[in-house]
Amino acid sequence: MIKVGLIGYGKAGQAVAEVLRNDPRLELCWVARRTASANPETVLTTDIPIIGLNSVSLDEWLDAHPVDALVDFSKPDALFLYGEEVRKRRLILVSAISAYGEEELEYARSLGVRTRVLCSPNITVGINFLILAAKLLRSIAPFADVEILEQHFREKPEVSGTARKIAESLAIDEEQITSLRLGGIVGHHEVIFGFPYQTVRLIHDSIKREAFGTGAAFALTQLATCVPGFYTFDDLLMQKVRNQFVAA
Ligand SMILES: NC(=O)c1ccc[n+]([C@@H]2O[C@H](COP(=O)([O-])OP(=O)(O)OC[C@H]3O[C@@H](n4cnc5c(N)ncnc54)[C@H](OP(=O)(O)O)[C@@H]3O)[C@@H](O)[C@H]2O)c1
Image (cartoon, rainbow, N blue to C red; front, side):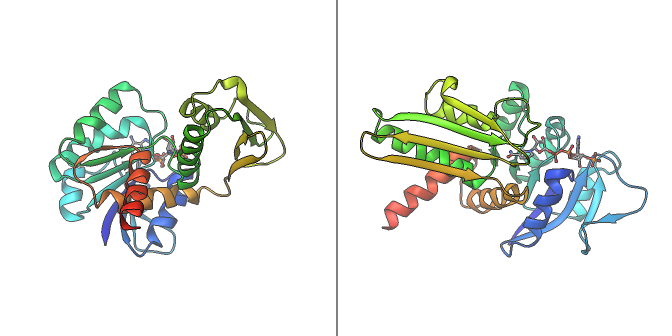
């Protein structure tokens, strides 16, 4: 069982905590947020403590509450608060922070020299699988027309970052993205391949934030089988694909 500490207990972190604590392969040992509450908090109906990184010595906390891995759903600067503990203790790190700059990424890569580090600005299994499958089909059929359709809730002003990432990974122009804004749609991404005599549609629909937890759990269990290094979600999926074909 992999013992896990979760950094960040906001909108995403709370959903992720639920998934991690219900996964039999993992033990969620504690959660850290920026600020400690005056009253000791715990995760929902459990004894899992919630601490404030601004009010504990992480070194002492980790001595008393050791874990094998950290999962980060906080903010970019938190990396520098716990990074040296990750390096020293060779903890597995799964960081889902979407907005790392080059400085944070370089630091995360340096941690990967001693331990296993994953940085994934999009951590859902479904979207990463969709991108992998779309890249494969694109390489098989470079002549097919490709369009991306994304649908989100009415208030979302900008083109989906995930749709732009899909376009980039398929080397197609962002003009091939069509955006629809409708009611309360959480997130719909569709890659459409138009062949002369057939059409292929790869579709992903987001339902709840818990999907981030499923991705983090996959990353933790997959990283546990890896040698030290800096990984992307794609690397972990490709490992699975390779193992599947070798086993077949
Ligand atoms: N990769 C993905 O697919 C994906 C998906 C969703 C979210 N995310 C990322 O997850 C992060 C959180 O998103 P959210 O929507 O949950 O944000 P949020 O609701 O604002 O929650 C942020 C959480 O991080 C904590 N925090 C902030 N700075 C910290 C620090 N220096 N040390 C420790 N904890 C700190 C906050 O502590 P307090 O509670 O004390 O304020 C809060 O619990 C963002 O960086 C976002 O990019 C990634």
